[in-house]
Image 1: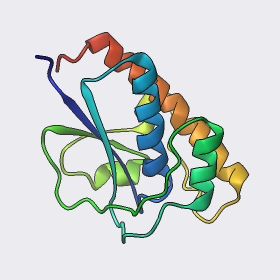
Image 2 (image 1 turned 90 degrees about the horizontal axis):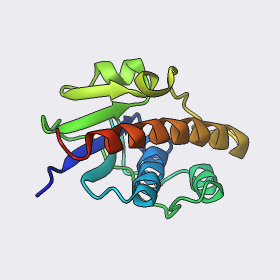
Image 3 (image 1 turned 90 degrees about the vertical axis):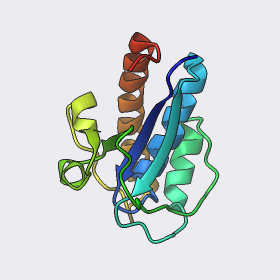
Length: 145
């Protein structure tokens, strides 16, 4: 039986960036036929707010699941999960195994919260590129941790 890798995308409120990353990563893994990865997302300061409308619209444009949901706050850090933070500041707040988007695509993911659809779409495209890189890395390891 293959090992299961748990990835959790982290941002501030879990209404934009980490929410979009979770959905985009699931789309990439499904296309690649990867079944040994469990994906989730959380917010360091999430309050149960619904996903941002423009985040859902950006996901739809990119072909990912765009169903709204309530944000989920990180309650505790699981040492068996690899966390993927959107920024260095968020990475510093994670008490566990963590990388940041900068490690994947050379830049942090700016917060589009409150911005227009173009800002969300640009953010989603950056996240999508990072998810492509991460998917290729997962393919190369084949489920072996």
